Length: 325
Image 1 (cartoon, helix red, strand yellow):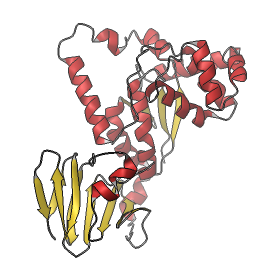
Image 2 (cartoon, helix red, strand yellow):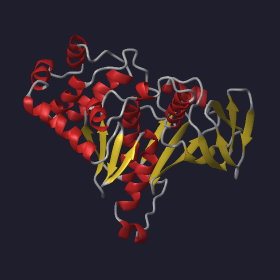
Image 3 (tube, one colour):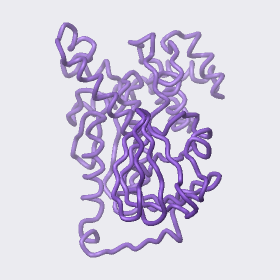
Image 4 (cartoon, one colour):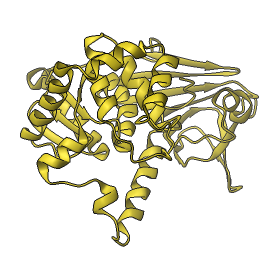
């Protein structure tokens, strides 16, 4: 398995979006991403690069397209916990030193989750010392100890060293990923990162091994009233089997637990048995029967038709469907 690295700064919203997707890739590939804190301002200074806010200022069309791509990424991965930070840009020097301090205190993973949440899910002005101190306390950290460590010469030196080493390997912004020595930039390259992990984790065995799984022994089962969704993860894919009893309806038996009024997951699959509808938000309703291969866009309700249980296989959308986490 190659070494996989994520070079990040909390100030990048795209790095946060990548952070939300990384667990899915880890689950599918068996890889564990190593998070490497870098200072984005230092990266820009060392490379002569500028932030998108600066480089796109006055440019026609490109900023609109960047926002469109971000919206597509959020929709594709079913991301709901993202908000633009009204205090952006936030000076991240202290919280990035805090990441190094968190490594010393052995609370790094929790620190990353909490600071990202407070930057891009429940946005706060984290370059305000009082706000940061209160945020750390509310998250269960020793705010006084962090205040000491972010001034520690060793902590400062390690962040600088991380940044310089990252730039020496080719980094010019965040998020940056390395699979072995191969570099990838941007959240939209995560597909390429995953492909590289799968291609390089063990080429010899990849050509020889065969893996068999059955839905009778699924990797995960998501249950709800009148139905269940069984998941098998294999070959970098997540495949789901939906089983719904007569009377099942998404808006009654799945939607309330997710807090959504209609299903926001995109589905591609095939009907095995039974019948069900896909009722789109625009009023269009189709009925799916055994043998039908379907593609259903986000924004729909669904229910079982008749007295026979409905069973279908899902090849797209299984990762996020009926997921309450």
